[in-house]
Image (spheres, rainbow, N blue to C red):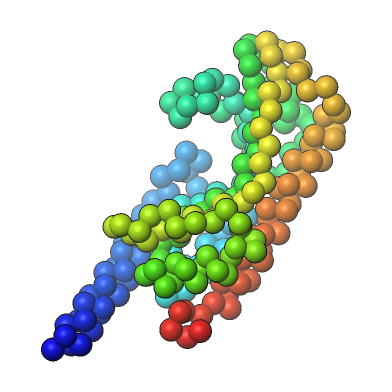
Length: 200
């Protein structure tokens, strides 16, 4: 009787995950940008094609100029790009302190169960060392996070505070962006060959 009960519970959990996945994937994009980053689409498709995972949010990596306190409701994004930049991107005329920030890829993935979450972490750690289980209560969510990061004050009251060459800074940013995209491609390839925990 106990065995039958456990099998029924497992079947219900599997159905719940599949229903949640189906429901979530038809929702509209509610991000600030309002659309999915083009560079991360192949990875999202590869993940969502597996039976044990689906993506809940993602960013392929971005560079932006901002001002304010840094708190969510007290920050103004002045310029933002998910693509390679030109020196003109770093040109801006504004009062106050203007910051430059580069953020690596981040993605949240819902997992069928803890076995699937642990397998995912095992597979991706060589690419994304900061990955972790973000939540294990209502949903099991794994966070993948790139380590590429730059943050620095760029202008103060309209005057450039960076003493180096802008062309060098642009090259550095673009190299980091291309490194992010290489990681996305590798991860998409991994998922395209994915097997569930039961098949491994």
